[in-house]
Length: 308
Image (tube, rainbow, N blue to C red; front, side, top):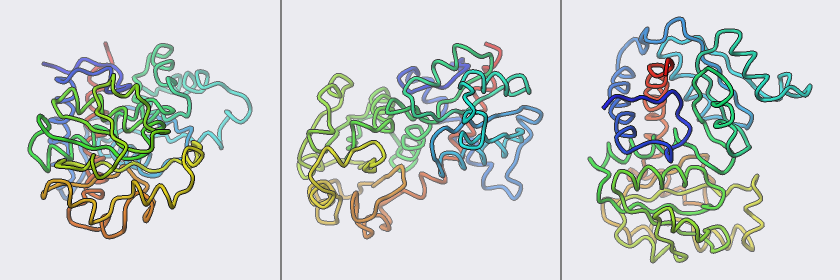
């Protein structure tokens, strides 16, 4: 099966086979990073614009490195230093870049659905780098790629996602992708930020971290998103950390070869202890490294589908 998507907007939109194509392509792209010259001429002459309307370090830097390793011409846009502050709309901004020759746009936006709206209105390909509290497909693909790399498979694994499920676009994308590839997904956190409708997505809901951890293969810790008012949903960070923070003692309830993940940035002492974050069983920095290969694969495959 060939990849036939012009855009990558969310894992909810992709089939299991399309997800596997991205993962397999990322394996090939990862080999490029082992070379002395970490660049291929694949997208030479193509222009890619990174439209970031929210603060980002890892995602933005990772996309930029991925684009440059494919030899694309890269423009990185910051909303605070653009005509957006003068009242220009998202669509007009994108159309201006398109008029300059941009053929792929990577967008992160605080409004859920913004990449979908853009994809319907412009000719360029669109890659969603995170929209509101909806989806974050590239991060989920990185997580799934890393799990497959460490465990050798996705099907049949028990994966636990811990924390701010309500506001997490990473959680949504991971549930879509992991379930499509045959994993069982558990979610856990305070009842106020673990909505019941996630059962309809195929996730099993827990409210006790200790119960949720029993015999899991993978633990994905999520950041408490204070910028999305998450702190209003429970009494204090201290209470949250005591109930849902990951410690060595709690982790013993999982399988012996469990791996611990986090999309970053980490709030040490809140979501997990430094002992866990720096343990060999944590693959957080491997996720960061794999991000470049996965995003190279996404860009490359979308470039192939530009004419669709």
